Image (cartoon, rainbow, N blue to C red; front, side, top):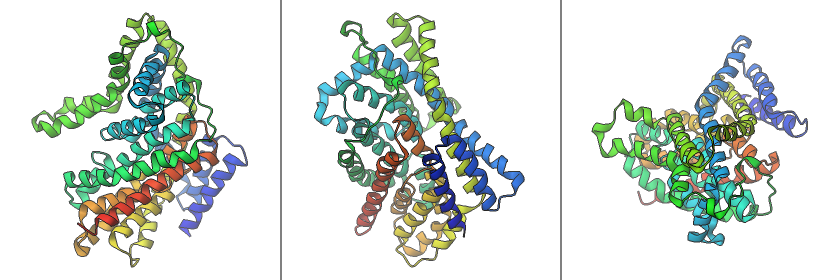
Length: 435
């Protein structure tokens, strides 16, 4: 009965947004309350769950999204985006621009949390789209596929790292095997799948349209790349430093490695190098920042609405019910781990919740079944990426940033995530024959 309620509520959400033309944020609030009542959450606690879901989602995202939008807008207005595009074009050529972005997404995605990487790299995608007049989804999917794979498969991301600890797997071995599986997953879900999306219409926000800047007034190559990628550099540095020098793992490193602090430092660097030093007054730079915030405000609301529905699912115990139904199925342990994580992911929407919930169910099977713990980490990670749809905040970030219809978002984003998950499972099962 629980699964039926979840499915019916998700279908009602889709109908309200598509057929009823209700604002997505309002639809999420309404469905969250209806779902809470149907799943047996006490009425007096439903509002608390909704508020908690919105608060936790925005608490981790609002600073990153807002500061990322400001940074992206400054990069676009200053001409740095055009300079970066010129360099990429010269290095890879227009015909290989997807592969260049895919490689960038993979390298950037290893140290960065998914939402941070998304916000930082989408302006780069848009600048290339505007400059080369290429379809946005066709150009963007390879980079975002790479980000998604690193989020689900590879430490030091939260879910894979927690799974390594719970399954007593070897971190280095998991990372190496994860990279082996990640490469075909990214290629199939990225450049190859994106070929089917070349005709998809996407009207991008004007925020990230590169300003027309005369060639003589473009920022230098080093300044353009350093201002755009400084968050990536700082996060990579603070992630690797404790691994290389354990004695340096102190409170200041943890403080500097916080995404919000990194974004503040990076924005300040961009304001100085691309704004003030480039002849723009502080008022002009602040006007650019204000315009950027206006353009992402609706995205924040919709993502927070998805967070409210996710919290209702968590508080109602849906994930435990699903896991209990599948726990005793007569399946290969690696496939069972993938299936439990995939089912929870589709119903709950959160890859991290799906992975961690599955870990508690599947951990006892590792010792008795003899499967390699690192492969189980990757199997559960692959399952946690399965078919992202309307209850996932990442789905709505993609939809709103790329300004797509619900149908086109399902056809592009959701299928891309499904390909990543299925290829990940196939890779795990193949490696299990040798490990």
